[in-house]
Image: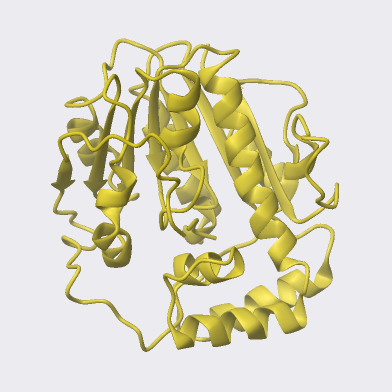
Length: 290
């Protein structure tokens, strides 16, 4: 489910703001004045589960109903966020990546991609991509970074990778490795082969040495999570598809997987100081483009 709080303001420097909108043939341009508060929204529910304030009564109600069926969903949300932090730490540190493309950004929270990356590499450049009107409203919070680096927000559709990349290269160098982040977003593409095609299209223009960090909700460990997701999808909100670990691993076809491969999120280079169940229905991994 889409990611989502308030960014950490410590040592923040406000750079020039870069917000770009791209008209998509699939959905058209997002309009921040057309926020629909009549149906629950996954990014706002995610925000609610993580203790954020950027949500409405309809989101809290849906989140509570989901949690009644599957109480462990809060652990899933936290594990996904912790996985994101650890993988970006790896990419900016050990892998030496200095450019990041975060597609399906979600609502700002603590430890956003640019915050984690720029703590390690102050000159890191980050482009966030989303087409949610609520995320667009909060986009400026995502654009607070270091003076050495650069952050930009692109209002564009996941289903239109060529349009995304045409704008991305105005901020990122297409000849240098890029870390592509797809955290909890591909489940919003119901058809698996379409989701794989989008991932391949996003990876195709990236140079050798680039990386993919991807995690999504799964349907392996808890039968209750699948039931809760089915109930949520019936509310009229944008549906989210839980996939098997093998299907999630399929997104990394053609990439060299970083150890330990595609695993339950808490098992990917675990943080011993984080108290999260080791096996939950969120799987992910990191792969390097040869």
